[in-house]
Image (cartoon, rainbow, N blue to C red; front, top):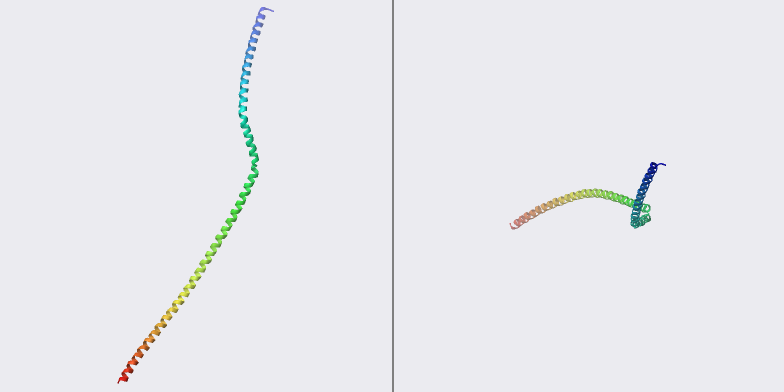
Amino acid sequence: MSIKDQESRQLIITDFEEKIKTIDQSFQNTSRFLESKTTQLSEIISQVEPITQSIKVYLDEIKQIDLPKRLDKIDATTAGLMSALQTAQNRIDNTERNITDQNRDLKELLKANEQHQSKTLESYQLQIKQMFENQQKRHTRHSIITWILLGASVAFLIFWQL
């Protein structure tokens, strides 16, 4: 081998060794970086662990709530309330109808009673008028009889005195 080849070889070996050192250095830096990140990640995981446990407990509590069963109960209660409201509305409607009917009947009864009272009042007025006219006729008759008796008494006195 020639010197040039040896020198070239030596240069290649030197260059190779430098590159290996650089790669080794880079590998060590990367390893330190990864160790640092692993440590940070472990710390984060240890900090997140209580939160994770709280979430698990919370999820267990939510599962124990049994939402479908409770929603079914709420639906049943709502349906019962709607039925009760419908029944109450029907009763209110019936009561309103009954009141309206009774009101109409009372109006008719009052009208009939008013007509009856009006007729009775007219009848009483007619009777009172007739009684008054009869009383006036009697009074006139009594007045005439009184004047006749007075005249007869005066005539009788005059006749007896002569």
